[in-house]
Amino acid sequence: SVQNLTAQLRVENRWKNISNPTEVIDQCAHAKTAIFFTHGNVAREFPLSNRIVLPGGGRLTQLDILNSRTCFTSTNVLMMACHSADQKIDETRQILGLASAFMRRGVNSITACLWEARADDAASLCIEMLDRDGDSCGAEDFRRALLSMTASLSKTAAFVRMGCFVHYS
Image 1 (cartoon, one colour):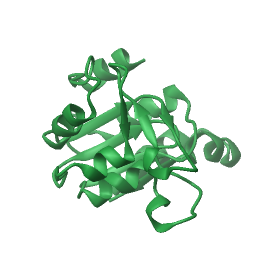
Image 2 (cartoon, one colour):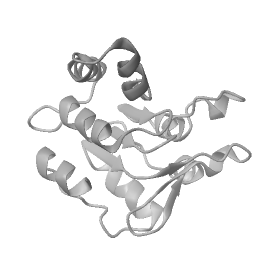
Image 3 (cartoon, helix red, strand yellow):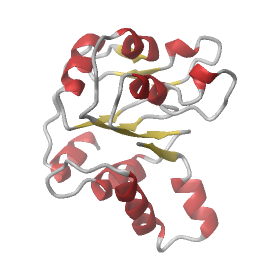
């Protein structure tokens, strides 16, 4: 659960009741690490409408991020939401879904999901990736986390459970 994840990571859930995308974008830009643990939705016909659900009931879309003047150069984003990175490539702007919007706004790194992930795997990946002070989310942390989490799994099970996660730095 989100409460369990935030307790284990010792982080504050700043977006608990926020439904305004602009507020979330502003809070995200001021965080070292922004964790989105929510539902995602891909809109194939209107890729700029790809979105995640905000805890307060609002939606954060790819267009919201692209239209913001916010720069995320010091922020690492862990976007544990279904389809937050898109696996179908039709046009350049669609390649990474929501992840591409954050990258265009200069995010330091982003970890996202190509398809629906198990909630416990997503939470475990976040815990494994972050070091004790919660400020590391680089490619090496992603590699180390995946190796640790798949060590006891068969190759097929490892792919099925962990193949949905991608990391861009």
